[in-house]
Image (cartoon, rainbow, N blue to C red; front, side, top):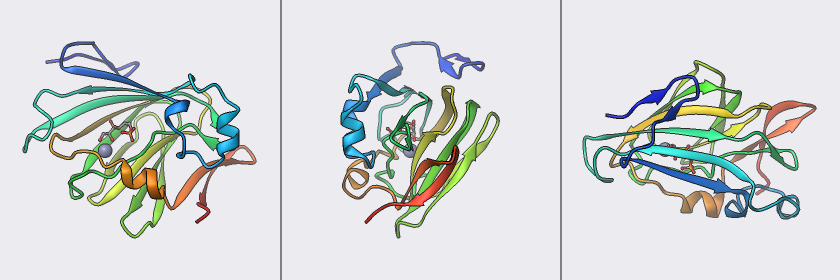
Amino acid sequence: MVRIDWTSGLLQPSKEVHESVKKLGQLEGIFENAAALKALDPRTAVYRVQAWCPVPEGTEGGLFWGTTVVEPGRVDSEYFMTHGHFHLKRDRTECYATVEGEGALILMNETRTTWMEPMSPGSVHLVPPHVAHRVANTGSNALRFVACWPSDAGHDYESIRKHGFGARVVCVDGKATLVRSAV
Ligand code: S6P
Ligand code: ZN
């Protein structure tokens, strides 16, 4: 058993809770404007993930639970966001629920059609099968959300590193806007 603080979405640290931080320097090639990224401090934390893995990764029939905190910020006009991934087992789905902050869940199917769902406190989202997912913080405070996914889903980051998403969420006149990616 683990405990969650519902006000922050954070899990109480335990040996089953894995914690990681993703910094700007590790997100090269993810944001569109490479020059703008280079001008920022690579040590800047973009997001933190806690994952409660009560069964070994790859176990069929199990579930993992996690909390992600995405910091507010932008690289040029593009909001701070997670790397994004397909599940290695493409048909594995996932649920997200927003605890705090404003954001966008960016979804892309295997034909690269990309859409977004606005995230705000209390919003619950389903990532359908065969759909890549990433989250952008479109607000000015931390965005916190919880997630639950099958323990045999796995993560395919490589496809996203190579081909990105079909669209990006950028700030246009102060508003989060989905714009098609340059090919
Ligand atoms: C796992 C789930 C989340 C993400 C986290 C970070 O399936 O979707 O816990 O891992 O939001 O995103 P990413 O793309 O770096 O894994
Ligand atoms: Zn996932």
